[in-house]
Figure (cartoon, rainbow, N blue to C red):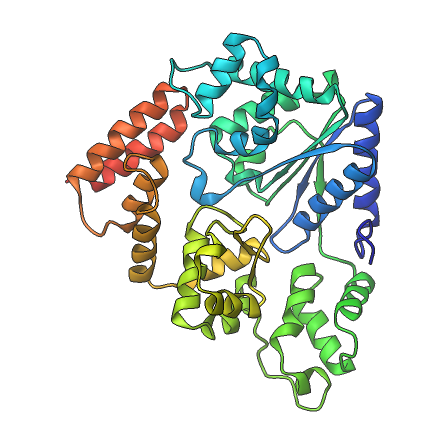
Length: 396
């Protein structure tokens, strides 16, 4: 398969090409919201959109919603605009100050959402003078509300710029309601496409094994790719009978259960730190991990270290599985370890400390309350309210 081909996604690929064409020509229709269940290939389609865009001369900006960072005001917006911040000198002083204040780059009076949106729009316009741009948003349902408001503001004005939006979310996500983009449902692969994907990724499967995997996966691309990797080689070749119950379970995370159980305690701890560290695809420095532990982690295929030096999960479902399978005590210990790496009153540290607390803690509740008030003063009322709610839960 080439970088511009995904098995069974010809219609979706054509749609992405049309979105990019409309953005380049200014003819409207330069956005789409991909919606589908976990494992349906939304992230693969977003990556394909990025590849098609770069091949067409676009610059690509990307942000990912992260459940653990939903309380971080303007966190997703900071991730999106960070590559462009060096261009902020082209903004007017009020716009630059508003944007930098919202992103926590300077102290100052709270900026209204409209001013932050206008500043973001001006920054994108400055960059789009050089070449067209694609904005990729993964896991919209986990984007912090402050960023979501600004992104929706930008989206409603994309007709003014050579700019495209490609966004992905899961069904039932409240954040997608009213999102100003045409909706494209991402469904399971058709039987013939599911078979083609399975054979391309796992050649040599016995016919009986192939039929069983196709039945269990029910057209879910991630399951088709991952499920055979859980089976013994003799089973794959049809030399041994298939187990009565394949390691799939009721939830897709079960695909990773055996590999998680086989992890050594230190490797499991590293994956838990990465899972809780704030990134759907990893947020713990691989360079700080002993070489033999890093190799054991990567040998599982669950995660790898990327060029930036962070652990990257092969899929957000791995992160969910790592967290769900850890005991409450281990999760609390990991939150404490992550908190110790951050400044004393950094909101992320306070969230980790709150997650680690087993009993009411008035001192921590007071720090959370003050941080919530500071964040609300910056114009991020929703995130501030979440910290205040955590403070209330820790107060007797």
